[in-house]
Amino acid sequence: MAIPSNTLVHILRQKIENQQGYISFAEFMEQALYHPQWGYYNSTHFNIGERGDFTTAPEISPLFAQCVANQCREIFDHLGQGQVLEIGAGTGKFAKDFLSYLDTLGCLPSAYYIFEKSSTLRNQQRAFLQSTCPHFFPRMIWLDTLPAKFSGVVIANEVLDALPVHCFRIEDHEIAERCVTWQNDAFAWKICKPTTDELSEKIKQIHHQYALPPGYESEINLNLTFFLQSLTQAIEKGILLLIDYGYGQREYYRTERSSGTLSCFYQHHNHANPFILPGQQDITAHVDFTRVIETAIDNDCQLLGYTNQGPFLLACGLTEFVTTAEKQLSPIEIVHLRHAIKLLTFPTEMGERIKIMALGKNMSVDLSGFNLQDKRKEL
Image 1: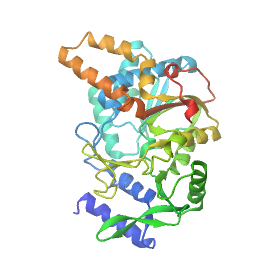
Image 2: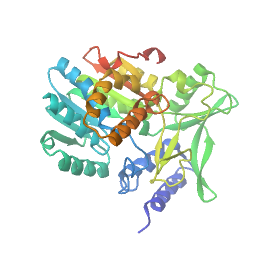
Image 3: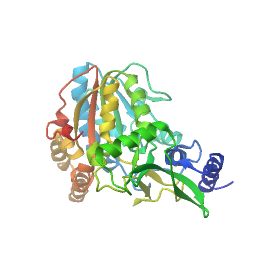
Image 4: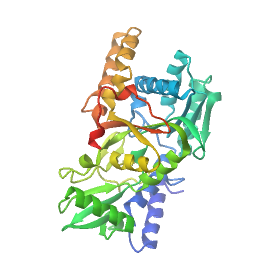
């Protein structure tokens, strides 16, 4: 049997041949990440953390989940009930640490739903949670589709940055799409006219609004609209917490960011070539949070908060959590803890690069996690 990489290469080459010699980068990224058998997130070798290609905040320290849980406890007080829906639950570690902290407060959610597209991750999550916290398992429910009339808190940590994006380039004050072709026995970029009218119109708007110069390259996420529409329509009443790498649109498309934000991760090495090892490396792009809030408003939501991860965690009790934790740790464990805090909060690490956005639907409440810093004007 062919190895996953070669099989996926063949599938992608066939798509290119069947579509007049090229496909959009969004289609390439969709297959590379989400092909049911050979896509990166569905492959048997996929993992998160030290043994994977990248790590996320929940893998760094339980402090992250505890701080988010503190914010959710406040939301539960206003809702009068506790239900959680986690979109893309990773290894399951966030769910474990989140529920463990709320358990100490006696305010566990009545149900903890997980919507996970990856069958590989779903199996990992079940095994991990059943072995490490079996007492929580009865209230955990894996979903194949988004629920109808959900009331509670929806959490999406590093989900939006994995949605497939279209890539574009400004050519002599005209717009062009950067598509994918096959030449010289390798995938390569091909400059084309935009493949859809919607894409053409969106790029024209960005080009005009931010005066993008010739040679400027970036990406745009048309999948964001459909994803957020589906998510917000599933919420009857509640709060949506979006946690991801990203910027407001003015920052995203500033002139100096002339190569976009597309990034690839393989064995914790960050590089810019999405065409090597298809199905065996992660591909991401930062989130345009201005488009997020515009879509959310169109779907009956309102912006309740937008800030950097560092100030959010501090406003949600990080200092108090650290003080309590250090009393129970050895000197070497304290060193590791402080290193984790640095990764989570320092501006040069996740502290400033990751943003937290809170959206409310049929619910308006002051959220303490946004009390230290308000970045809504940057949207």
